[in-house]
Amino acid sequence: MPSPFDVAWQNESLEGKIVVALERIAEAFRVLAWEVSKKSGLSPIQLQILVFCLFHEQQMATVSTLAEEFHLTKATISESVRILENRQLIVRKKSKQDQRSHHLVLTAKGKKLAQQASQFADALVKAAMQLQKSVKTSMLDGLLHMIYDLQQQGMIHPQRMCWNCRFYTQHKQQPYCALLQKALQIADLRIDCPEFQAISS
Image 1 (cartoon, rainbow, N blue to C red):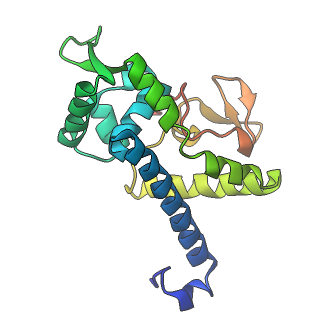
Image 2 (image 1 turned 90 degrees about the vertical axis):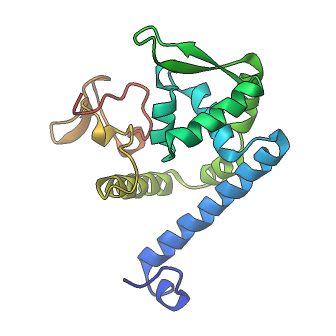
């Protein structure tokens, strides 16, 4: 298969242009994340851990879950957690269900930094807001299909998205959420759903 970075092929290929466009956006993410990283004195993954803990249920904030979420080893996550503990940004709290397991809980200082770090992508949000609704809907549909395909290939871990959820079904030939009890339009589909339950659970 030709490389999307081969300009001659890229310019004749819609797929090549899409891949390179995604790479440019990923580069913007990296630049924005490094700017926040330099100001805070933390690495990008340490900031990602703080932001994850800020916006997800406490029961999900474990070393095992974070290792799976960010495709890193438990040892790498544990080292980052140790640094965050030393900076007094998080504390470990024993799980009520399993006393051998710990959840990571943000301190007041950690919450403040996580809130600031979570805004690093504001420029990208503003760019997306400039698009017409029909374009945004088409983009979301295409990106969801790409994410799902990469997941099926084993390139990324299963996402907490509608298509993987036991509540996702079809009703009168239309996507439907049995939990919310509503028909789903493309704009309703979620990539990271707090009510997600895996089909196998």
